[in-house]
Length: 183
Image 1 (cartoon, rainbow, N blue to C red):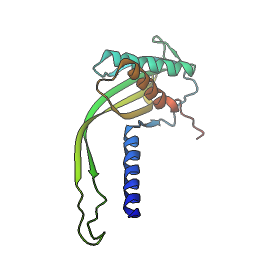
Image 2 (image 1 turned 135 degrees about the vertical axis):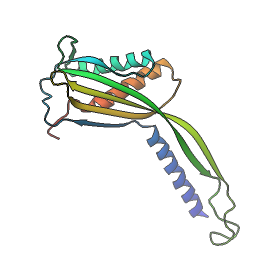
Image 3 (image 1 turned 45 degrees about the vertical axis):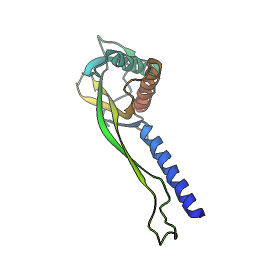
Image 4 (image 1 turned 90 degrees about the vertical axis):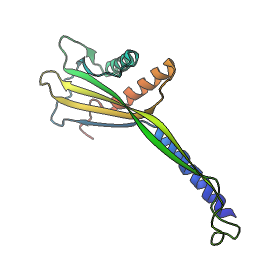
């Protein structure tokens, strides 16, 4: 009788860990290995793909300005070293989850009686957001760095929570800008 309880506990733990992993933001970046990042001190924003919500777009610009300011860069639209171009897109996906209501054995143990349990399958539509931040060499017009974050988003979050989530996302995406070529 102990084995089914352990199996059920292990299954529950895996489901909880999977749910936590789905909620986490996935971040990646790439850069031009030949680009010189040491001389970058100024930036300016260029239009990319807007979210459709000017309030969200403003939060993204404010968060990027804050992070780049912490790194000693200043916003100089007249003579930037790099252009910052953002793209924000949303995608809807279906999430399928199956829950078993029993350990799957019958009246005679694991080998006899075939499983009396039920399986509940739930389908929900989730929205994922993708934020891409491009750094484009202002003199050459060439992409030198790209960071991307993907995460499940809530469609109607409150403004304070949205501020926090945008700041966290931008901070996490720009964590590797400028890239450390030694690593």
